[in-house]
Length: 461
Image (cartoon, rainbow, N blue to C red; front, side):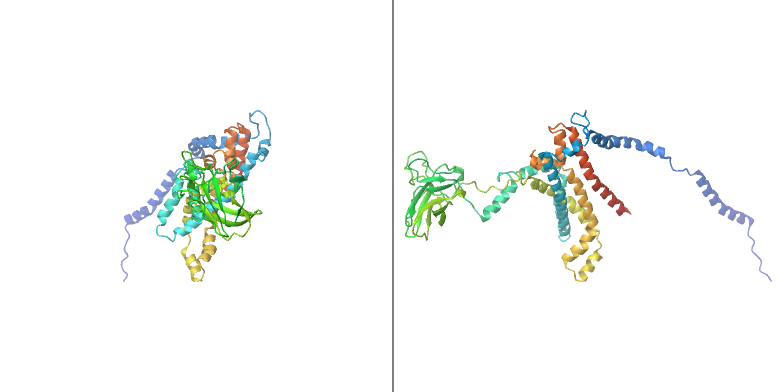
């Protein structure tokens, strides 16, 4: 006996068919109602204001500068490539080219190295965040303000310039000099000493066992040491010794006897004294607080007492940072202060992305920290380091503010960006030559920009 077959209700069948067919119908209806992508002319309509602004602010100045670079200062005569060849003629232009080359080679390289060192070291200290904040803080200051700051830092006077104050303190720690700039002997027939070039020598000669008077004049009060004592009579010289006194032979209020230490006259401490015979120094001594000195173990013979020239030169006052020799390195130093934080932050981000497994594997294999850094960390950081380096090269080619403020118009500090402004608007009034320098800078920057764009695209892929 067969089991009764269950009949499917027609409604269910119809409903099921309907249930299957309706979504398809709805889907087709939706596809029918979908609209194609907006036409390109509509997108261009919305982009047109931005394109016009971009063309007015970027494209037009570039094109106009290229055209203007082929004309003379007045803009009325076509001169061809004379403006471009003129960039490499003349002292100021050649100094600007040389300094720009120094900037491009030195500044980005040193900033990248400092940023790398800071980034690696901050991974090993607890207060890394505070350190990064302090190092990055100069980026928040404008180049104009940074230039003003370092203009003060590089002041020649150690009482004003921090750099020279540090140098003088370091110098005086190891070599404390006492000098009397401008001091000299008395002139006239009764003078016991005379000038010999920059040095001071006695008019007469002395033998071992004798004492000498060495009076000096024209000493400014500011150069008298605080430990200077009243001038004393020369000590009694024993056989084989030469003694004497070097003092400021001036009695306030007048009076007193010449060429003899009087009451109220000051001894000159720290003066270097030499016994000279036939141009050779036989013995040396340094005066005490009261100006007296004693040279021992002096052979028999006749000697002249000499105070060397360095007793009368100005004391060490630091380096001339804003002079012709150090001005470019000094400005580069201020650039390092500003941009080291930028390099450190980017490199630190690259370090954070390095797989720790690679570093640990190298350490497990027995590599030292230096080997891990040189053979693992640096190769993995190479893309980041290259981006930082190229970005800094682009920035260095445009450097203007620091050179203008710190250099103060010194032609020895000139770079191409500053020379472009000087030639065009800073008194040269030759916008043809200035445009040529601008185009040259654009051509120099362009390869670095293309390299950065290509690197970014490769990283996205």
